[in-house]
Every structure is written in C-alpha cells, then in structure tokens.
Amino acid sequence: MSISSIIKEVKSAARPYELLELVVRLSSYHRIQGSRELLEASDFMRGFLEEASNEVSVEVFSYANPPKWLSPLVGWDLIDGEVRVTYPERGVLSSVKKASTAVAAHSPPGEFSGQVSYAESEDLIPDDVEVLLTSNRSLDMYFEAVRKGAKALLIYRRDAPPKGIPYIGLFPTPDEAYKMKAPVLCVPRGSAEKIKTLLGKGEKVIVEGFVKSTYSDPRELKIVMTEFGDGGREIHVTAHYCHPRGTVNDNVSGAATLLYVAKLLSKHSCEIARNLRGFRVRLVWVPEHYGSVALVKKLLDENVEILGALNLDMIGEKQALTNSVLNFIRPPVLLLSEFEAHAFRNFFTSLGSGWGLTTSITRKHQFRFELKSYEAGSDHDAYVVFGIPAVSLTNWPDKFYHTNLDSINKFSPSNALRITITALRAALTFEFNNQLKHYESFMRESEYFSLPKPIYRVRKDLYEQRRNCRFARELAGYPSPQYLLRKVKDVEVREEIKRFLSKASWAVTAYVIANTYSFCGLSVNDLRKSLVGELGIKVCERELDIVLKSLELLREIPLG
Ligand SMILES: [Zn+2]
Image (cartoon, rainbow, N blue to C red; front, side, top):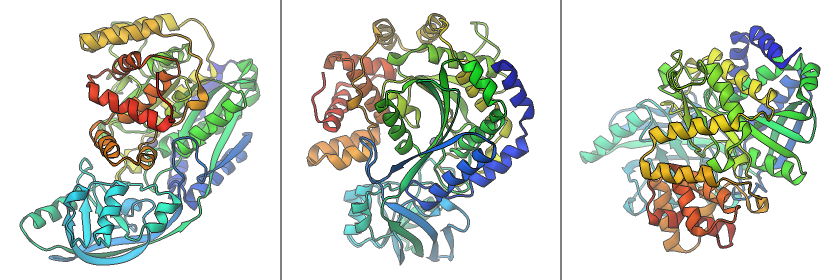
C-alpha cells in the first residue's frame, strides 16, 4: 500500500469524538513546566501510544541543566488559590476553582490582604505598596514590589479579552524561587480596569487571598517519541504538550491530535517503513523549548542528520471564533530547502486548491491560511537555531491565546485532524525532487508584490547569496530573554536591553536569525543587512546594535 492510500485510510478511520475525548483527557493535567503533572501527562501519552502498539521511547532531561541559553527552572506544584475583593464591594476576582490560570505559574505560596495600588514600572511602585496590580510580569518588577513591601501581586494582560484570566509563567531559577515570598495571582482585564478606575478616583480597594503551592528541586523533563521507518536521516513532527489545565488550542490541539493520528498510523507501521526507504519520521512531544532544544542538541551530538521538522502548535482553532489565520511559518531564507518547498506544497494543495497565480493564498474554502516569514515562538526555533529547516503551523493571532478562555468550545477536531494529517503526509512523502526552484520563484514573486521596495531588494540578495553554510553548532542555543537579562550585570546595558525587549516584539526572532546567520562567517555589516531582509521590516541602527550586542553577551565571543 502506498503512503497516499495509507493516509486515505487514516482519514476515513479518524473519529472526531475520539479525538475530543483525548483532548479532554490531556488538558485535565495542569502541565506547567517543572511540575509533577507535566510528568504525569508524559506518562499518560506514553501509555496511550503503547496501547496503540506504537514503539515508544522516552528521552529524559533535567530542568536543573537545561540546554544553552535557557535558565534552570525550579520544581513547582499548584494546589489552590484565590483572590477576593472585600472593599468597596465583596466578590471573587479570580479563583483556581474556576480557572487554572488564576495563580501565576511558579508563584510562591502565601496568604495576604491589603490595599491595592497600581503601577506599570519599577520606579512607579509606591513605597507603601500592599498589593500591587500591574500588567508588568517581569521578575524585576516582582522583586522591586516585594522589596517595597508588597504582600502579593495581581497581574492582568492589556490585550486579553475582558473576562480573560491570563496564563503567566514566572520561570524562576531555584535560587530565585527561594527568595520569592509574595504570591502572584492573575485577574481578568475587565476587573483590573474597574479597579484602576476606582483608584484613579482616589478610592480605596481592598483585597484578600491565598496561594497554596509548593517548590521542589528541579524536576525531570520527558520527551515522548514514536517513529516510523529507520535510517540515519530523520524528519520530525513536533508538538509541545505543556501549558495550563483546561486550555486547549495552545497546545493540547497539536499534542493530542498528533497522538491520535500516531495511533491510527501505527496500524500501518510496517507498510510505512517499506515506503520510507532510508529515512525515519519521528513524532516528538516536548515541553516547549526546554525539551525541543535539548533533544535536537542530543541527536546532533550523536550525528543524526535531521532533514527538517514540522511543528504543530495551535492547530485546532475555530477561526471564526478565535479570529485567527493558520500561518505556515517559514524558516529563515538562509535555510530555504527542498523540505520547506515540499511541506508548503502539501499544505497549499490540501488546504487550498493548488498552485498558480489565479488562486489567492488566503481565505480559501472559508479556511484562512497564510504564508509567513520566520518568527520565533515555538519549537520550530529549536531546529532553526541549529541550522535545520523547520516550519511551524500555528493559528495566529488567537484572541483567547494564553488565557483561561482558550477552552474546548474554540477547538475544531476536524480542522486539527486536517492539519495534522497534512503534516504527516508531508513528512512521510518527502523526497528530493526539485521543487525548490519553483517554490523559490513563487516566494520571490509574492514578496515582490508584498514588501516595500528597499526591503524587497535586501531580501532578494538573501535568496541570491544563500549558500551552504557550515554551521558552528557548538555555538548554537535558544536565546531566551530571561537568560540574557540574568546574565547581563552592567546596569546600563541591562536597562537598554530591557527597553528593547519590551518595545520590539520581534526581538527574539532577531536573536535567532542573527545567531543562525553568524554561523556562516558573515561580516557584522552583512549580518545587519541580512537581519533587515529576514525580518522584512525597517530596523534602525540602534536596534541592530542592541541585537548584535545581546548576542555577543550570550555567546561571550565577538561576532563577525
Ligand atoms: Zn504554544
């Protein structure tokens, strides 16, 4: 049986209600990085795959020694938490009983009561602060508030829906967690705005509440894998399985659907292996970044050749509800490959109606699908930082993203199945067959029409100068901003980087791209040019300077 007949069988065997059951089950774990329930979720996934007769392997790493440029993470478990207003009215602001996001991930335990003050930056926190309301979730803000006497922090998100209780992760190292004494709760934007209005009128708002949670030594981190075929060359399909209980599209959608399709495929594993001829397709479930970077590094150290990866993150959206578009996020132009061309062709033909200038890329069959230049933010980054082409399939934006409202009623099992099966078809049918030329001219043409002229010219150069780089992989890592800020001791430089990070939403994307490009021995000047071309936006000299300086600080060696 050919791969396409197998895929057809899988499609007709798929039952949306069975997938829904699996989604409910996986999202019932509070899968915060560093928590016990994250490990329990990995055990559940392993069991599910074993029962379906997949060959399963589990790779174990530790949050105590994460891969390069991620910080160690304390172990943490949540028991309960709530915050109530007691004056001027009485009422529950936020409670774990209603939403698992009500307590910020990695919040210390504690009880509190006091008057609320509001501030957005460290220097504006009043000296007599009791409970601080803010949308600034940095650890700097936390420690400054506590230094001034705050007994608790209440965090909201400015761009959340009015009733959305945001998912906030503090990600402290064990040393930091040891010093954290004031609990952190998350509140809906609507309530935060009401409180701000009252405070603005000079009125008093008093709250009380508690968090029950425990810290422990850093935990293990488990990567669950199953595979089809064998050989030294691999293609990966990845999904992160972390995030709060009850939330679905990010990313139970990717993790559960990949599990379910893996089960359906396992009935055909011998035939798939026969078809694959010389390479292996590995399905990978990871804790985001911590897991994927560690795994890719380990495989590369073992001389495994990874041809490419497809990442599934937020793939179940009912687009009309979430207002999202399915993005096909490309790797940087530097990593343009047959693999990317092949993946795109699969998605374009499955979700749209084929190649050609007569069709529009977006809004076909009422399903919004769009091609995007590289953006950092999920596990495709783990491949890109090592110079491996990886594509991410991600619905974006999603107005319920990272809030308790990312719930099962926004999840469409049929969309999730369609995207996951397409990703697997792309992975299982890959061969080098010269699609790159067509794909490249297709991309360049569409960029000619969509980019401002000066940026188009720089980007065109990237396609032309693209060369086979020898990646200095020992220098690679995932440039996490938290790690960078922990590392930089010079107060002025640190402030400058902090301002940049809070202003430029594309900062991490720029770090990843600059790091990948710097492997190729480009001069600092060419590096700047490449960065503008890749980002596709105007970037001023000063910002470019900060990107390159940050990278030098991370790598501890000069660029260029
Ligand atoms: Zn995600």
